[in-house]
Image (cartoon, rainbow, N blue to C red):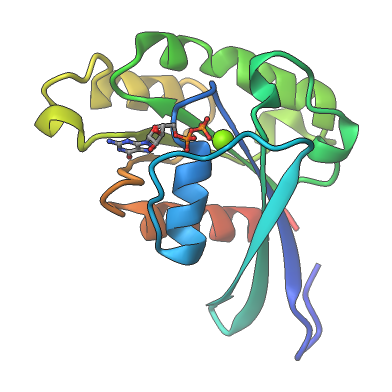
Length: 182
Ligand code: GDP
Ligand code: MG
């Protein structure tokens, strides 16, 4: 639906992936341009917002983070409800975090239950590419792109929350993708 002139579009985005892959760090780098190194797990799901303009459209991106519960408990319906885009994150240096992407994707589709699951927009981020100059990575760019290609061409970005590399580009794509699903 078109947004009337002067009205902001509110886009809900949720970020999923194994604990420790850098979800909170990516969001903080994107919204506050800060890398803090260590975040305390807090209780309950929470979100941060970022205002941006896309093709003359005022957009508020509402980005929901898991507060550590991704480790041991389900995130609850309110977390998933009404999401316009789901960002999946893995750590290019940790194979397990890549292997669990499917589980996260399926969990999202099950919980959010979108009208057209095959067309629901995901964006994949391969994070921590700064570590060891890329020498400790265990998932190649090709593997990640193949994974995306076989699931309806999910956009893929390699990022470093630590260095801020590709973070703005990735979330701009997330915003554009979410906008198409408004
Ligand atoms: P989350 O559990 O997915 O939210 O992950 P966090 O954002 O809490 O990050 C987990 C750990 O990885 C923290 O110690 C971060 O400082 C670190 N980290 C996150 N992103 C990066 C990155 O791009 N590069 C490096 N070197 N460390 C990162
Ligand atoms: Mg976190």
